[in-house]
Every structure is written in C-alpha cells, then in structure tokens.
Length: 616
Image (tube, rainbow, N blue to C red; front, side):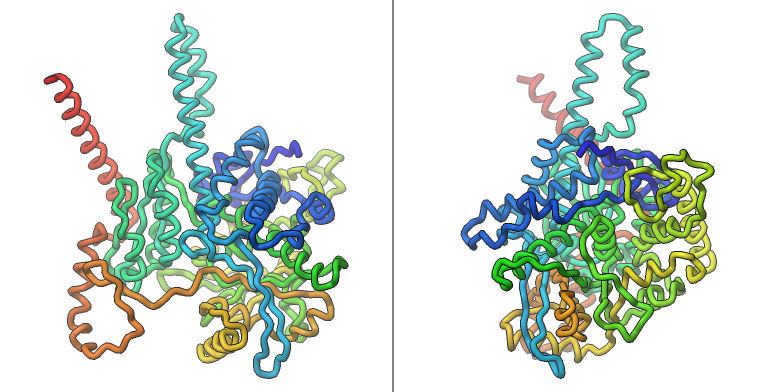
C-alpha cells in the first residue's frame, strides 16, 4: 500500500514525525511515548488468501519455507507502519532477512506454537497453546525486537553516512560559494535525522534483556551501549554474562546502593535531558521505543496463523472461525499493549469482560502477575494509585500511557464543527479510515499530559468517569497469584504429563488460562500463553568467571556467607565500572567522560601512527 504513516507524542509536543525519527529517538522530547497517527487495518481473509495459511504443507526439514513465511508476514505487518518513502520494499526486506534467520534463531518457525494437553486438579483434558519466544541466540523474548531494532539502527546509520559523504562530495564539486550556501540552507532541516552514530542507555532489568542487547550491539561499531546494573548481589550474578564481553562499545556500570527499579528510573531521568540526548544521539531500546511494540505486534499474528493451521489439520482441512485469549507475563505493559494494537488492526482477539467476575471464558488480553495487585486494581476499577516507594508502580508499566491516549481519544467530545465535512462522520475511536483527526488527538494528548502531571504530584488518578471506561474493561484482564506452591504444582504437572519444562512466569500464565477451558473451546475460544524466556539452570559465576552450580549441597555455607561481600567486590572490580552517585547528572558525566577517554586514546593512536609514517 502507498500509505504514509506519521507519528506523534502521547503528550502532544512532537507531531508529524517520521518513522526514522521515532526509531532513532525512543522517548519523545516531552517525555511522552510515540504512537502512530492511526492504527492500520489488516484484512485477515486477505492474509489467508495471500499464502499465510499454508504451514500445514510444511515438514520439519522445510527450513527455507518456514523462514520465508515468517519474513513475509513480518514485512506485511511492518510495512503497514513504515512509509515506503522512508524505507523501500527492498531495503525493509533486507533488514528483516538480516534479522530473522537461522544464524539468530535456532527454530525454523522462530516463534513456534506448542500445544499442551494435560489434567490439573478438577480440570480434565486441558488444552492450551504456548507461543515459544525463547528460540533466539540468547534464549530470550527480547531477542526478536533487539536484533531487528539494532539492525534497523545500522541501516539508518549507513544511509546517513552515505548522505553525509554525498554532501561533502557536492560541496567539493561546487565552484561558487553562493551555491554552497544555498545547498546548506536547503539541507539544514534534515540535519536532525542525519545520525551517524548512536548511544544506547539501558537498565539491565534482567539477564535476558542485558544479554540480548550486548549480543546484538557488540559487533556494531557505530553504536555504543551503556548498561546500568544495581549493586545487589543477585543482580550482579545475573548480570555476569553481560559483563563478560570485552568491547570498546559495551560499557557496564554498577550504581552503588540501588535496586534495579532505581536504575530504570535513573535511565528515564537521563532521557529528560534533551540537549544532552541530542548531543550524543541517545536512544532507548526497551518498549518505550515504538519499534519494539511494532515487532511484538507481529507475534500475535504469528500465533493466530499457526493455531489456525493446527486447527485446520485437526478438522480435516475444514476452516473454522475462532477467537483467542492471550495470557502474557507482566513486563512494562509493552507486550500486552502490542496485543491491543493487533486487535485494533483486525486480529480476532476475544472481547474481555474484566468487570464481570462471573464470566470466566471471555479473558481477552490477560496480564499475568505474581504478588502484584497494581494492574489488577487499575484494570478492574480504572483507578491509578502509585506506590510511595522510589519505584512508583506506574513507572514500571509506563506503556499504559500509550493506551491512556486511546482511552482518552475515545472519550473526546464531538468536534466536527472544527473539522472538514469529509471527516465529520467518522468516529474518533474507530480508526476505520486512515484520516488523522488532529483536533481529537490534541484533546487526547492534553488529557494524557494532565493525568501524568496529576499522577506525579498526587500519586493517584481516577479514570472511572471516562465515557470510554468500558473499553478498558472489554480489552484487558488480569490474573494475579500469591501462592508460590500452586505455581510449582502446575509446573510439575506439565513436566510429568507432557515432559515439558516451564519457567515460573509461564506457570503463572497457565494457571490464568485453565479455568473453564472446555467451555471456552466449545465456544471456539482458545487460550495462548506466552513463554517468554527459556528456563535456565541455577548457576552463578565465581570471581574467576567459572560457573558454580547452586543446586549442589554446600557444606561450607557459613564460609561462603563470610566471603560473599568480598566476592561481590572482586566481581565488581573485574567486570564493571563502579558509580557511587545515583543521580542522572552522574550518569551524564560518566557517559561524557567515557567518550572523551576513548576519543583521546583514538587520537593518540592516530598520532603515533602518523609519527611512525613520517619516520619511515
């Protein structure tokens, strides 16, 4: 399609932005999040007619066909969010092919569906689909987004370097100074997009995320990664694999007297320093960056089309219409938000009914948590109530801001008298066409900015009076469990009956899905659980970077306890830069000094090289 997609901030300061601008920035200048001007539609019937329902014809040895299917689907989804004027079809396909291949993913389907059939307590013949997201090189659900995102960065950098070289060449060829001035004036508006290097700042929220980032960036010379770690021992040991890389563009820093949520807030605070951010081309790579959401949208379509093929085989080639419930482990609300976009694009996801406890079949998009009532409270009541700790509950689920925009937009008053007559009949919440209703969007941005300010100052915001509050209840649902033994029980049951090992988060999603399982399937509603990160052995790394198995009995526990503090110091000194000051200014200073140090070393090497050449 010849669609021209543009983006704007949830808070309204930045509008009419290109996909390239959004990808290379992450957070918007007003510290909001970028969203597309409209949500494009995808006709499922058209997808099926165009060759996306042919997995049943494959066999396990048909590697090329699986990868081709996945890459074709990726192109179809991504193309709807990226204007062809920005990235041509061939260039977009090149980035996709470079990202989703056998070198980066060890399963031919990349994200395969696994069907589990088991019994659990009073629930017999349970049938649940798992979407396995751990087949990337780091065994992590982050791999797909980080691999694609960093390859996209590299594409933009190479294009920009070509542009800069061409500019210099044109200037050399120009004979008249006046012509040069005219060219400079003509090109200056594009300067903000002419990024030839990138600085990435992130908090290592878990080892899967950190490892995925390090592996994706370590060979990309035009990118520099600063990865922040908290100083608690558990995080240090989990972070050992990310800090073991020796590379000029990977920098691991431990911030003393912090936990990981503190580090995440520090990162977000640094991004508010707009001048500094622009100076070093600082970009976010978590789901604050729209590209991560876009890649995750793809996963929902991958799930649906694979399940459709499975059911078609079961039904002897008879297609059936069905809807899906998705049960997703909690993160920053980014993965589940991608499900909302997929639903709005046309994917048949069940309408939830989270305000009705008697209806257990209509789950919709379910956020699954353990010992965390914040999201459950919000989705069931429409009340934000942030915690009083340094890591406020809302900021852990910052992608809620994107959904709040759409919730506000659906409640916007009719403003047809301000708009051209051609758009007056369109609903502000439907997105049935590709018209960008600027006035309605401005209203929604104003509301979001007002809510964020109130949340920051009063720690509480109520959305219950919104006309569109039922949209929240009908889209999302939550499942929270505090019983660790129950999680262990279902993990054991699946391992015993299916010979399949789950991690804790996936165990929680299964518990969320099993209620009324038979009744759901009678109504042609099927459950999909996201298996995010592959379960790993419980290992640590000693001060010599040798793995130690924690599962073995330890006869010298007291000695180890006495030495734990010293071990921690040794590990820190071997693998990390150590920062005592947790302030954003300290991080800014650290990044600048690292750049200066490497710049001076580089210049010194070049001077020595030139000196040697002169001597010769």
